[in-house]
Image (tube, rainbow, N blue to C red; front, side):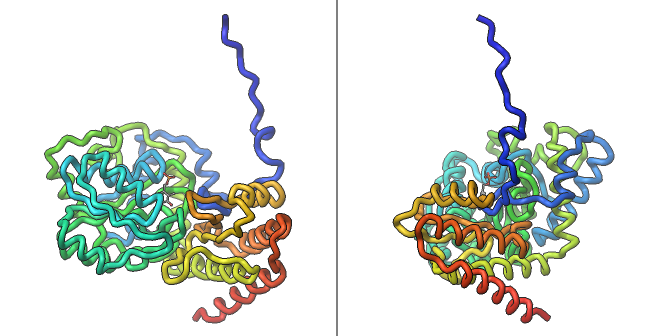
Length: 401
Ligand SMILES: *Cc1c(COP(=O)(O)O)cnc(C)c1O
């Protein structure tokens, strides 16, 4: 029997009639310049690409706040960058302390276990930040060589706000620190060198507002020394950081680089530099705080209390009567706004990363969100929510120099 040509829809038959406003936990909307760059294919080993890579590394040093030369990219999701950081610094027998705040930080622990490490997990309740004193106690007793931690735990919207102190105490114990900043990079301060972080992981589709599928890792000199000194063979060929320097430092062939995605990332990072980190952090903070005020004025509850509340992704507690999937389906079908459900807690999540933090997106999202609850039979005060959003934005603007 021959296998017939399948009947395939054209894309316009699959996509909704009106584009969805992507306000979930990533991917996030991308600027025009990023979309245009993503439509271009060039030689992955030509002069133009060498210049792009040189600039991506220079911009990464600014965005990660590091002087390190050891910036490498990977064709893959944020998880590939996580695995690149872990698999290069960890091998059978390495003692790893994993600070586990939830789904993504647990993933770092699992990656370390799969790399053969002896992993101790510090499991932290949802909505609580890691405590530097508690971490110090484990460092004293367990003497890990590597610590893994997430800056913003996207799954339950917790912020490890004492990251700088935790990195400092790890450094005192001569323990290297791997930070997952996939969700948070360029949305809030992260000072790799000043805080003494040894590997920072990011993806494209969240804080940086690029496309998914191209990710970066920055290694410190100390981390790079450990990679160079390892005698255990690196099990992953594609994720081998030393091999990656062929493309990232010698303009030669490791594997065919994701050229379009790199051009998109270049544009996204260029826009971060043009805006400057300082202004970008302020924009994110103001938008997120105003949206939080709006959600609370609707009469709804945020899942995490400050100071552990993550500004980059907000978790909103749902009444017992509503299911996360139902809320997400309703707001998407009826208002063309996409938000995220959850990996466990009874919440839905609204992102505040990159292009999501634009005032017009906040108004549309809050209106759609409040109206969704009303439609589903939950009493909320939409006009009060909208007024609180506007008032908070005005107040925050007034506090600016
Ligand atoms: C999204 C996310 C990841 C995973 O990124 P993928 O691109 O889905 O692999 C890891 N860590 C954090 C904190 C995230 O928000």
